[in-house]
Amino acid sequence: MTRIEPLIGITTYAANENHEVTLPVNYIESVRRAGGIPVLLPPGEQQIESLLPHLSGLILAGGGDIAPECYGGESHPLVYMVDEGRDRMELSLAREVIQREIPTLAICRGIQITNVALGGTLYPHLPDHFGDSIEHRKPPREPTPHRIEVDRDSRLAAIMESNNVETMSWHHQALNQVTDDMHIVARAPDGVIEAVELTGHPWFIGVQWHPELTSDQDPTQQNLFNEIVRQSRSTAIQ
Image 1 (tube, rainbow, N blue to C red):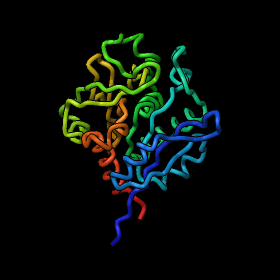
Image 2: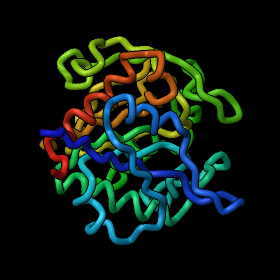
Image 3: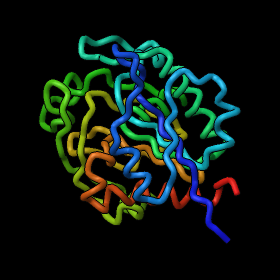
Image 4: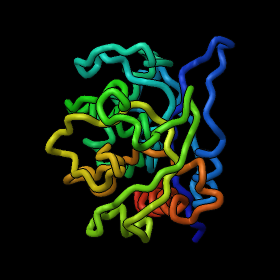
């Protein structure tokens, strides 16, 4: 019997000034290396309930900030790439995958949109609250590495086979208040929340860093994509 590989939805960036919807190819390659079939989900889709039954797993990708109005926050001069259509769609997606218990990997913006969907809040600009002892992105908006500490007893530590991990960071916002549904399983040395697992969900992991940026060279990061594809195989449409 031929094994059916799972369809893994990946959210994309909003349309740019050239009317192009984009996504860094690293996400796609990471899913393909794991054996999954990537399906890109551009902002604006309103038929979420019709879409999700065709997907076996979901990656909520990074890229751009969430409108502060979504979480009762204050604006900041460095908030960028806000898109109402993307916010609206991804908030709906996050709520649906939680309810339907679809295997989900939430990356950077993805962990933030999930927290907001559950009623949590964000820090609008990390240096204002945590200082600059740890760079979470290089000016003006470039990735930078730093280490994180992962809870030894977490699912994340088992997947990555380590509790002290080098990550590629690329964000200026992060989780502030988290809901009871979220279990914090990793932090940066400055205290910034770096990863959560969703209580009661079969497989939902949110990471604040960008594993796709180094997954081609770092098996620790590729393991995250390998595991979501493995988990999604059990729900793949036959």
